[in-house]
Length: 296
Image (cartoon, rainbow, N blue to C red; front, side, top):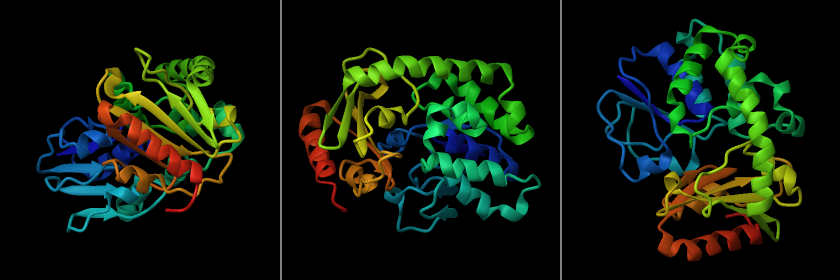
C-alpha cells in the first residue's frame, strides 16, 4: 500500500495522517497534479491518492479541488474544503489516537491562504507557516526532507520540529532566499490592470521563495500569474494563477479558468500547462479574463 500525494504542506500533512490510519508498505510517491492529468503516473491497486486528481486505478481518494470533481464511485471523500488534510482528518476522526486538531487547523489556513500580512512577511512568528515554506514542489531533490517532516509531524510537537538542525537550516535558507526572490520578482514581473505577470521562462533555474511575497510587492494587484517551463527546460509551459491574499478583490474562479486548459485548482488558485506553440494565445486569453475580473 502506497500514498500518492502532492509535494506541498497539505500533501505532507495528508501523508502523516494517512500513515496513522493505514499500514503503508511502500515509500510515498510525490507527484505534481499535471503529471496525473497527463497520465504520466503509474497508479496501482492499493494506492491512496490525496490532494491530487482522481485516477480510477487507485483504492482510496481524498481531495478538495473544485476541478477534480468526478462522477464515479470511489472509496474515500471529495468535497470543497480548505485542505485535503482536513477532509482526511474528519473522515477518520474517531480512529486517531493523537490529537491533530491544531495541525489540521493551521494546514487549512495555509493551504487556503488565510494568512495575515505579518505571517507572510514575518513567518518566523508562526512555526507552522515557516515550516510550510520549507516544503516546495519544484525541488524534487528534497524528497528525503519531505519524508522526514512526515515522521516529525507524527512524533513531535511543532516547537521541537523547528529546532531540528535540518529544519532550522532550511528556515534560515528561506529567509535568505526571500531577499533574492524579491529581486527576481521585481525584475521579471509586469503589471496590467490589477494583474501581475511573473515570467521566469528565460531563467535556467527557477527561483524559489515566499509564494505570497509578490502580493506585498504589488499591493494594487488582485491576482498573479507565474509562468515557467516544466522542469525548467524549454517545452511545455506551466501557468500558475493565485488570488492576492491582501487585496481580495479578485472575483474570477481560478479553477474554472485553468480547467479550460486541462489544469486544476480551486477558487483562489490553480495551474495548467500548454505547449510552447499555443502559449501566447493561451496566456493572452487568461490575462484578459483576469483583467475583466468578473465572476465566471
